[in-house]
Amino acid sequence: MGMSVTISAATEHDAEQILKLQYLCYQREAEIYGDYSLEPLTQSLDDLRAELSQGRVLVARLGDEVVGSVRGTVDDHGTASLAKLIVHPRMQRHGLGGRLLGAIEARLAEELAAKRYRLFTGHRSEGNLRLYRKYGYAAIGTEQVSRKLSLITLEKDATAQVFVASA
Image 1 (tube, rainbow, N blue to C red):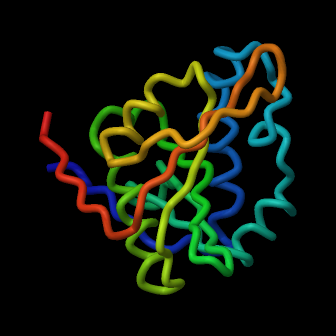
Image 2: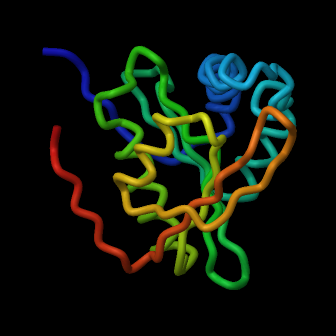
């Protein structure tokens, strides 16, 4: 029987694996938008380490390998900003993205009293939009970043109960 994926808090020792996985995962986004200068592809290891110390970062592990990650912070008004939900391409479409999303929401509500969750994704990122809608997020705005990219901001209330039908 194979190993199961565990989700836990990231440590400073995970930074390099997270950055490499982020680079791998955002290649598809860069291809979709024809833009390889997206921030997740240009982020430095020092910047990532700073994010690890400023908010909550979770990793999904398969043995010692980091196969997924997500980040979150909460502002003074209780709005949690979720970012960089990534899952290794070979692990996608098995529910790991939803597990990471649920885990970061629970962590931010419990530890930082999040009242609502907010995230964004590109307008052509259909898989991301499907996942977020499945977990109760609704679009609240769109910002045109360039002629090729518009970012859709999605939000949900922390008290919203989402029942996800199994596939």
